[in-house]
Length: 361
Image 1 (cartoon, rainbow, N blue to C red):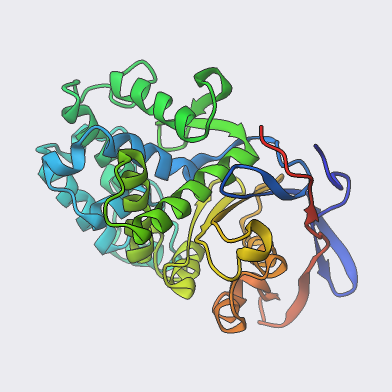
Image 2: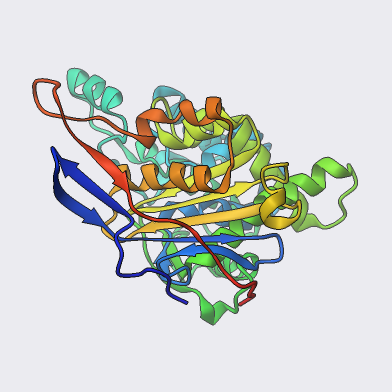
């Protein structure tokens, strides 16, 4: 199914002149995995990059690593993070390694410039060279080391697709997306771990499951299904510690803070984003009550455009009060200014979500 694929989702104007246009795809699913709304190609095969981290964290949780090594919710939040390399992020990653009796030398991610401009400026002033523990994915890697130890596998080469832990991750990711293993393709991420690719609506389904699991957990204290328990645990960790999932001034942190536990969101590099929305009066018109999942992919990977689209999707679905959406205004309608601080343009949304006939794939 492709809807309005030739129509750009966003135009960026300088003055009254269109400077750039941006194609995007949106999928919105209900608690049964039915596609409810779409724009572009909701089934686009998508390298979801860091938006897959909750699924990768699920695989680690299911090894028993959290209990074995005493990981708490802050550790779990960092496992799902693309953090800003703030001091609290680096300290948490080091603490996780200590719990596993591992060291920074065991990590197979590399250091890089931080995602935060403020942190970058501080590093420049200190002439600081970042190591692996400073990677925005260091929490995920520390979790992978814990998972490897928990299943009795070697720490060496934990990042390779052939390692027993990555074989386990591959199975869990496919299962939680309701796909056969052959239905998920794999590449190597920027942090040196395998990263999955699957249809965009399956990313929406993954995040719907996070929100639905938390709803079920809140309804009864005795959810017997261990996967549901694990998904709910991941939801709570991310929404309880949004500052660890991203950082000061970052969209994921601002979004989850604004909605105060009503939704979970995670960015992926190169223009992907996913949200799981818990059941509420806002979801009822779309799902009849239960949770829903949202996934977005911007073709050219523009993150500024991505965040503006995500907020517009929430607005079109009627999710969030005016006050909540106002907290996201710098992402919703970012100022485009020149070197003198003069406004020179703006982002114009061009898309409308279209209701689809209920389908399950």
